[in-house]
Length: 134
Image (cartoon, rainbow, N blue to C red; front, side, top):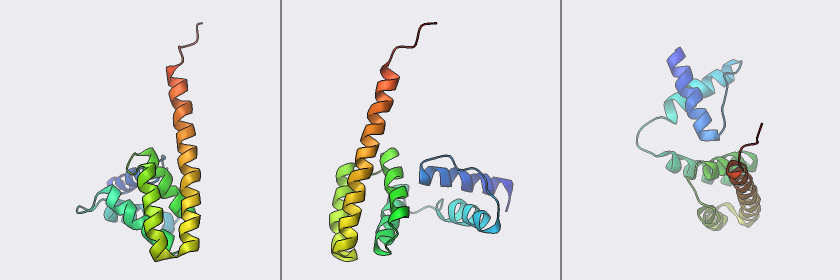
């Protein structure tokens, strides 16, 4: 692992998750950053959106809703997938992953879309307020 590879991995991991990721301890974290994010997520041939769509399908199929929530939230924050596209993904995946998994995904999407819309509205309101006078 080089410092450049580690930084490339941390940058990509931050981009994928939608928040700043700092370097962490341990071999598992190092392999995750240096290989998965620095080498695999940065390969040419698929866009970030393509990779996220593939990962969402896999996560839903495996019942990994907690990790799917991270990907859905990041896709909304980065405007890679719209709320309507996410809803359509839930309908589509329901027919392959099973009704219980699809229903759970649909409910999580609605919650995450609502959270995202509230956060966006609050941020817009904060940005439109005039600065406080000293």
